[in-house]
Image (cartoon, rainbow over the protein chains, first blue to last red):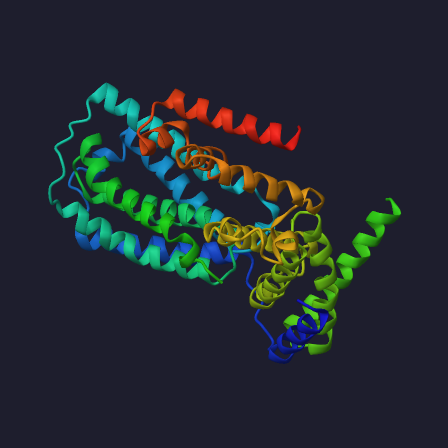
Length: 212
Length: 187
């Protein structure tokens, strides 16, 4: 490619230039989209119906710990997604470790619970939690994808991972408020498996999903 | 602060200034920015690619990417890390596409552009021809084993399965071929 070709391209790009609205700070974007997503999931929880034993569960420390970890994963991966929408993610690499650390603790916690309480896997069968989870996850997923595609990520795979962690964890929290089945087996199959599969699909299509 | 880093900081400030003006629609500043970036991107890439044409192609991609993502540059951040992230992303993208297409494997050694496009050290180009000649002189099975194992990156197990040989026979065959090539090249 000669200099003339490059000069011509620069001339074209310069000619096409229009004033652009600078992307808001990632924190502002994350708070805005996150608040919408949380409001939506809370509404769906109320619509679907809160589990009957919620008053007891809110005094159950393991339940609260589980929700806190899921909340940490949802929040930190949402923040990481917002930062990843900027090409250099403002050089805040540590933001990527928080969701992974949260996920690690969550998995460890679930394994320990399964070991102590028993997993009680019942195999894959249709359950209303699939529908509730889909309902809870769909708008947060759309919002976070919209937020991600509004920027220009240079890490599409990481972005896909953070996105799915964020809306998956949020929907998981919602499901824990509506579903009274506390076994690890039920949680893995009906609350987590759909989001793991979505994550795999999004990972496979990440370069297309976040192309810019 | 050394003279180099001082110059770099000044350059950074200038780019940031042009980028902010470009975000407001200043075409002159934008033209200045793209011209300045094209030189920098080329030299940044030059040391990490085997082929100068690739550097030009990626430079073009980077400038397009800067154009598309101009809104993501923030005034409170230095310009260079933002730009370098885009350069690395486009370079990785370009190389992945290139190797996915197996362009390097499809190229003929006799193609006039081969030396400039695919050979990192053209002074050794004669050896490519010699290797090709030696490989051509081998029995089909031996050549296939060598190509699969040493050139295409398959494991000994995979080659053994494909060729209906034992794993150790595959390794021995590849080792003999390698020795033949070394002897022929006098290395």
